[in-house]
Length: 324
Image 1 (cartoon, rainbow, N blue to C red):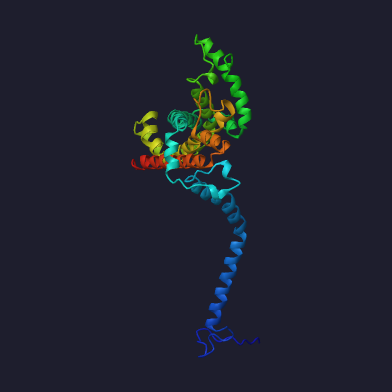
Image 2: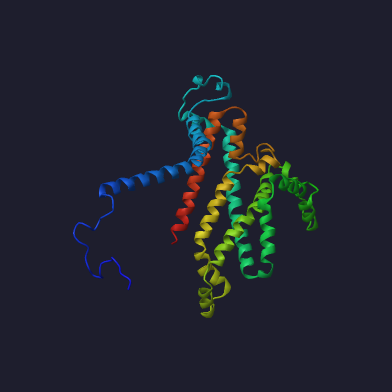
């Protein structure tokens, strides 16, 4: 018959033998602290490459450019940094007295005010169409409209230069309905609308995908219940779909606003800011000032743009939250 040294069930261990074989409590605390310290050191060692890269290439330039925006630092001061003078807010005052900068602010505002609503409405219309009406070709349309997003800006510029030439595709189409198209890229009136068309085409796919994901998250049973109650398609969209899509609209428009306020690639590859600065944006103005060696002025322009992006994003958040 097998024997065992285990105490019978329900028997308490003798006094003084409960922690037999275990280290004292103080030693266990020290062991736990050592283990946590080793885990923390290991975690920091794994995070160290990112922290170094972020500090050197992101945080460092941000802080240095912020400090630089209060100085008169130019390319002539590179050999003698101690000659740089601190001018404080006078740098920002000089920036707002610069007529070319003010012109770039108006151009950027024009681009944002026209481009963002146009892109949002078209992207929402396409997303609704893909979600409801043409599901058979959904994948093909997704690929077709998203292709401009992943296409090189150089390739896009080549295509749009062909479209916007005086005898290009757009003017040929306008000619079919009896309209004489302008010389889009060489006109101070039509160069900005031409770049807006190009930007809308480039950003439409990203926003459409975001809106499509939001539309597919709308519960179908609520829409069916409204349909049973007699609501037509427009009423279901305005009263149910659009309110439930508000967080997605907020995300999409904020991302779009950040991109449109940093309006740079289109004028850089298509017009170089011309003709007569008609497509000069704040980002392109900043790029030019860095090229001219006016590092203090360029840094100040960068932070003005940063504040504009922050304010516009805040306004969008408040506008959409106030309807909750």
